[in-house]
Length: 267
Image (tube, rainbow, N blue to C red; front, side):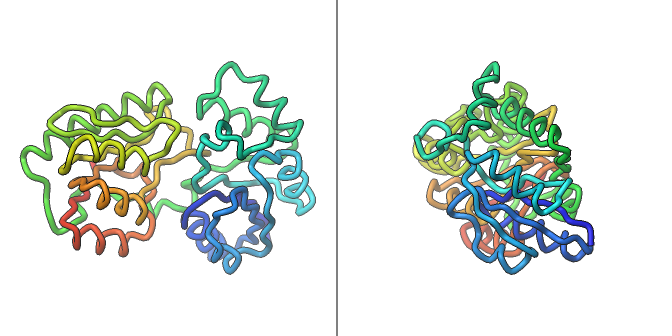
């Protein structure tokens, strides 16, 4: 059996990947790099290790120990960990971070990809086995957008692409063609809550891939937590990019969205 590595962050996406990989006949070696990883991951992998996201040397040694030479990095690991003191990088990670020209997402991730490659470990395209989770264009919910919402969808979508081009984030919250919030280090859910509070209801959340998206890392993802954040923020519409967004737990998401009159558009 061919082994494939899985560096797993928060959320259900690592489980989805592991299930698909297992069905394809891969033996999945998982390393959970956050404490709050999805505990059911254990059921879908051959072996599960835990290592702190800052323990780069340990992560690489585990992969080499298991003779894993191809790995996927999937699941949310927010950069906030680097700045709130919860991450204590080992010497290898510290040396890597200190060598970077900036702390942008792509800069950090590309450096990590290169570090793994230096040890003979190839980072795979995240979407390679998950194309079935990337929906085509259309309205997915029972409710369609209003004329005003459609104007905000078009505007927010374009603004999300622009912040992605600058490697700031992937999500914006808009209302009446005014930007309420732009995602940065806090992550999508916190951005939605902040934007929704400022919009005071009926905001549009737009999430897109970066124009030069590297599919080895950070593909945009939508799931139940996204809709839960929208419900709390009283946002009315979610727009995501067609065939470039991973849409997890689709049945549960659409049920929840329909129950709360939220419109989901794939553009």
